Image (cartoon, rainbow, N blue to C red; front, side, top):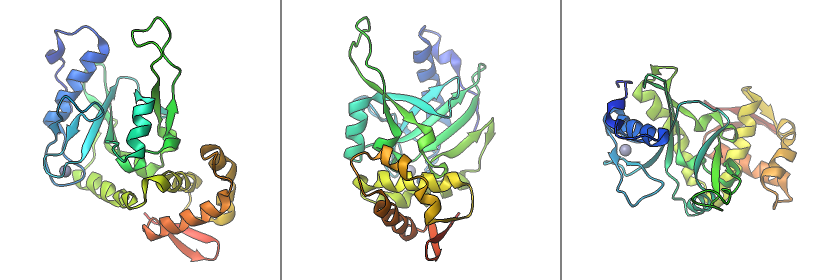
Length: 255
Ligand SMILES: [Zn+2]
């Protein structure tokens, strides 16, 4: 993988966002492999698929690319709010690639967020565009990276260092099991996993998790039975092999 982009491809363009899109899409088409299978490249998607930029020619996994110069670990600006929510409800969200380039056009960081991690909890509605805007009233969204557990943020390039392909593919395969959880429930599964990961310790108890009750209630305002839901999600995470039950009310995290 060569981290150098080709800014000369965009000399005809003036807008920064357009230049970034052209240069970073070219880089992905030349250098990126599929994390879901052994394909050594991704194909550009057809023009009529707005949230999908690349598709794996071998396994059909869709990818969306967001490129930026300034890294923000908390949120990434994404597409329209309603179209994103509808993509989540119908399980059509692509895997997200967040690419940061340096001022001299080297890929500095590249993060892969598997599609199974997108739920309503990680989408933030933005303020509608003002009356002066070309698309006045249009509502965009942010993807809240902070609401996505570490398992869902797979590093492909970190501070200019390339991670081995087999490690990226292993991480992707590990969390792909979450796709077995129905989309309507998966938001809960991921929010509980996020709370567990934030403890930052190999063992935790049900009481630890109940400390996150109010946060989970805020994320799921329609659900009044948060504690039973937490216990149900622990079983889901155990069945996926992401945690283990050690003794009643005590659990350990599996890597
Ligand atoms: Zn593939």
